[in-house]
Image 1 (cartoon, helix red, strand yellow):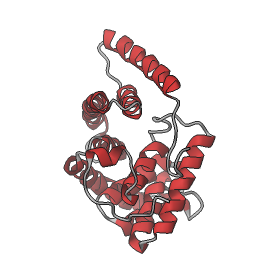
Image 2: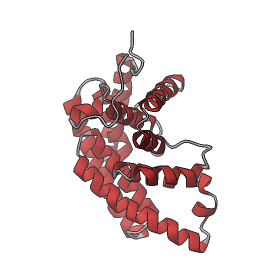
Image 3: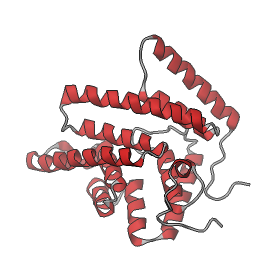
Image 4: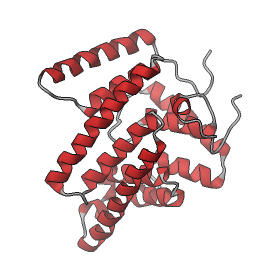
Length: 246
């Protein structure tokens, strides 16, 4: 029987998803392409199958692919673009899966400077992302994540308030709030919500990694709580808000 924080994946189905993804990656390679989201998915599939070495190898491929994406966006949109910042957060999150915390923080540091500047300038010019934040979820979710990973917990919470008016949740903001309040019970409830949602909607390990990314935050929440998970395998730092396993 699974523990309350565990999600039992069907290894046969997961292996089938991995094999399908590897075929797509192989087809892409014939034309000289490596797509971030494909190799990232393969990396996560490998890890949930217990092959962490191969999983890390594919996550590293995803990191290199995302770096190229960032360079291309810089050429098209300029460095101080919210698109660059959002890509940097994706890169940072990929680093999280293999425990490269210093590199994660560097990407988030650069992303936060861009997000804050874009938002402040947007207020002056009545940009849509400021006037109607609910229509720019990718901007605010990524911004909150970057603030969270820099330890700017109150700012991560404030970003959610701008975006959602407390109606739609951003998991990184919620985790930041639990850490600040030292609320282990709320963290436990959040993990249960993530588990229930992933199971109910049958989310694949790479489901909606572009924005809300429930599997990433499920692993992050377990790491904070000191529960077994992938992030703990690559990051030996102590839990920020340990909770009882029973």
